[in-house]
Image (cartoon, rainbow, N blue to C red; front, side, top):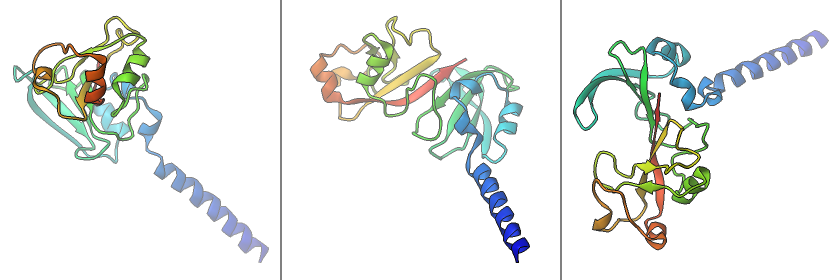
Length: 191
């Protein structure tokens, strides 16, 4: 009978350890920035159980054709990768726009507020108007994040006035910025 209990105990320990490994995806230990040095084959090895789709599309406002890869498409963990070359050996950028498992060394995340970005940057930030390809793009203005490879795009939680639309730096009062209730809607990591 004692052997039976030892066998059950060993089986429980093995089962607990194996389920712990299966439940912890490898990407929880990675920062998005660490993926920038990988090529397509390395990514496929790193994420063998993820859906990965590859294609070619137009970027830079439709002026450049580039290869791209999407890991975990149509999920909260989706990450969009654009390549510098058609053989997918060098990443140009990575983009996330949902609040999934990805994390950044900067602590910026989807949903970070304008105020949080200003605090992280240790200097006021500026941003472009809304309603175009680079809608809400942030300028770090020589702050702490200026030399980072992180580009952030803001989106207002409330409908902005017409003067906040278009390819222009927004000139807004602190009250107008507070009223817009700006949050990070996308993060782009450049290699």
